[in-house]
Image 1 (tube, rainbow, N blue to C red):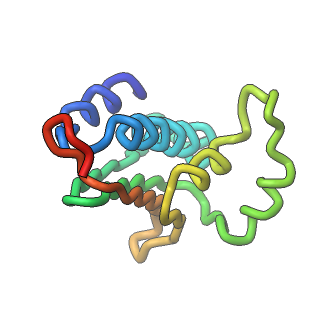
Image 2 (cartoon, one colour):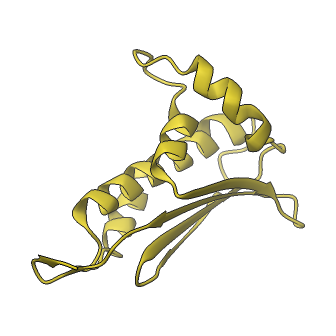
Image 3 (cartoon, one colour):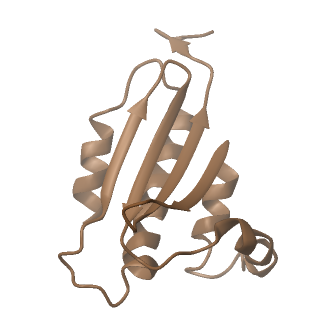
Length: 132
């Protein structure tokens, strides 16, 4: 499921978005989607939808990933996850990576009983080969 999503995401790239920022957002999208699949949707039917929305603004990029898993209090868990993040581990660092990349990060329960992961990344625009 990840490859088609990343292919779709790459179609949204704009020349004014710095390459480093784009790659960070690509990683954040991959981590967010992987977390939704592995954790939020664990035990749910494979047909349970995960919705993704990406909005490109002149100086920021917003990504929203909606899942249908149980509620999860990200704010409460962040301090514990930062302390427990094992640099050598293969998994378990997704939220720490998201927090490091994002300028704004939230995971909230919506009125339709879904969860929305919001990742906002701000940047300074690049113009045709010149940094602004």
